[in-house]
Image (cartoon, rainbow over the protein chains, first blue to last red):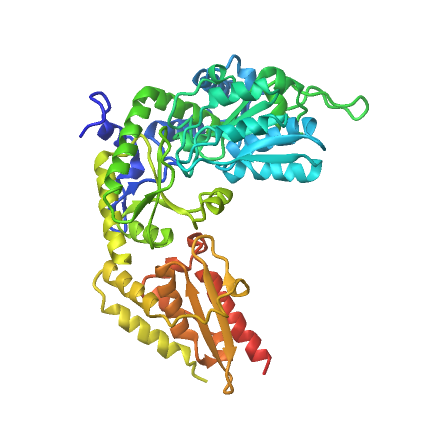
Amino acid sequence: MTTSSTYDVHAIRAQFPILSREVHGKPLAYFDSAASAQKPQAVIDAQARYLSHTHSNIHRGVHALAQEATEAYEGAREKVRAHLGATSTREILFVGGATDGINLVAQTWGRTNLGTGDCIVLTRMEHHSNIVPWQMLAQERGFDIHVVELNPDGTLDDDQFVQHLNRGPKLVAFTHVSNALGTVNDVKRWTAAAHDAGATVLVDGAQSVPHLAVNVQELDVDFYTFSGHKTYGPTGIGILYGKEALLDAMPPWRGGGEMIGTVSFENGTTYNELPYKFEAGTPHISGGIALGAALDWMNGVGMASLTAHEHVLTQHAHARLAEVDGMRFIGTAPCKAGVVSFLIDGIHPYDLGTLLDQLGIAVRTGHHCTEPLMDKLGIPGTVRASFGAYNTVEEVDRLAEAVARAAAMLR
Amino acid sequence: MASTIDPRQAEIAEEFAMFGDWMEKYEHIISLGRELAPMDPADKVDDNLIKGCQSRVWLAAKRDDRGHVHFAADSDAIITKGLVALMVRALSDAPAADIAGANLTFLDEIGLHSHLSPTRSNGLQAMVKQMKLYGLAFTAGG
């Protein structure tokens, strides 16, 4: 069974050095890309080349290295802009990751716009990183949080969304793809409805940018954030996209060098222009450059091919795992990306994960940082297999066989 | 004074040395989990719950007239429960001071030390800490 005549998964795998290692004496089958994707040689090389050849601090140096490093870093920002289809690099902020991006919006836009009597809308399927920053701010500012619940298949309840919109929320913040269920949400439709209701829209793209082509202008979202390490890039770097008018109106968050216009004890301090207003201190330069390389790598594979390949893997995983007695899938939305979450009757996910690890198979077990979702479903967690560009149909077969074998031991 | 714990650890290590591969070892742990004496429902309460990130562990302790501490424990995950059973076997019905001062090496010897790692977040590490605290508390209490 091949995924597509043009998608050479073995050639892709060969670009990931880590995939040739063994775990517990068995070849590694890595199904934890939703937690963090592995890195292709092109990304490893880009970061190493920068560190061994180009490194300097950026933006103000007059010497050659400072200029080259600045060009590489700003070049990466332009790659991100092009990848997301943003109008201008002024709308592309380098942040630490999606968590950092959401905290930035909460602490600047949120602190300016949300207060007593206001409300915002979140969903049941949000990662803790799109819940806790809002709870922390709500505690301080006294606004309400309304939660859109799920349908049994793991899609969001549209009717309830409309009801919450009728309350006049200032913000709707939701994930593009659920990290625990794999559900792909209709960002364009929800964003249009939220805008009609007068709300600003933030979308958590941590689980979508690795799998789908995303165009922020087409989606018309106000804020969109993702993490570099889930898109085959380094940890500690990510992106916050924001519409220029919104970012312009927002106060800075972290103060320091780089984000200022002029600093004076006597005459006050002014702030730099976008995007630098939000980038205090020396940034993660090598990370930004390697993130640019990671997006280049993904575009080299082709986002459409990648999406199609992962769709085949997800479908195949559903079909093969369904053969295991007592299998219960958590999240069966018609449109899913990258994730298959499941439980087996009478078996704790931790036990299954432990035995799969012994078989060289890396999955994630637990609540996946979505405790409100797990509580609502009344389960302690799930076993989650998540897919990347490098996974093969044969590996999925190995997963299904290993799950059956582990389940037999645990029954 | 010789510890009552060390001979038990040696016995467990010897028992596990018989297994040829990981499957036999885990099958044994799973059967130990199944054989663990059920916990009194009155003890299986939130106050006795050790919060692990993934598997939950309950632990109760009491001291008898001889100053020995007896543990009862349970877990919702069977592999964790098997490891819990090993801990109970090593530490239960021993003098409080022996428990407080126990140097637990048997998980290392049987190649299961990773289960005590905090990244496992199975509640086992916290359980061992709690068992020793009980040992300490019962020692101090006379």
